[in-house]
Amino acid sequence: MTLIKYNPNHRSTSSDPFLSMFDKFFYDTLEDSSARRFLPQANILESEKTYEIHMAIPGMKKDGFNIDLEDGKLHISGERNTDSSENVTVHRQEIVLGSFRRIFQVPEDADQNKISASYTDGILKIQIPRDEKKTLKHKISVK
Image (cartoon, rainbow, N blue to C red; front, top):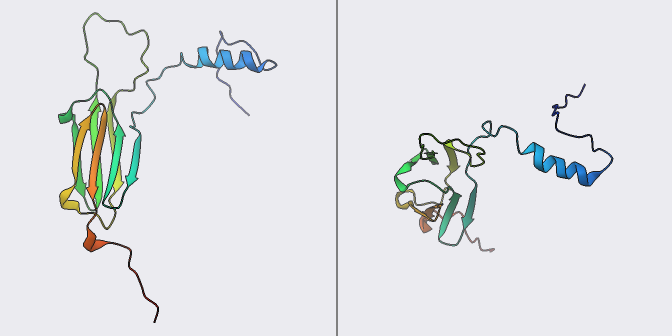
């Protein structure tokens, strides 16, 4: 048995794909978005000398982040809230608010004592330098 969410404003448009797309755009976006979880998107980059994590988290202050290294795992957390103004009615809220937590495994060849972080233009950048002494690649010569 399949359950379908009933929307009295939603027309039956199974025969016309364009109307179906139109209805999905307008009616599905009216659903309550409070059930969505705040999980910032991340890019993980690797170069010869560093690893970098870039997280898109606009609307936060630099001191709103908690970044900890524990047992080879980088824990990044924080909370994004709005400036609550009195006597304001919110008609639509698409920006997900609340607290978040992301955990990343730090590579074995990372220099854990030199990890740094910066926050500019809504992007949190964490730089993890590689330790040349711990390099995981070794050249093996054939005899």
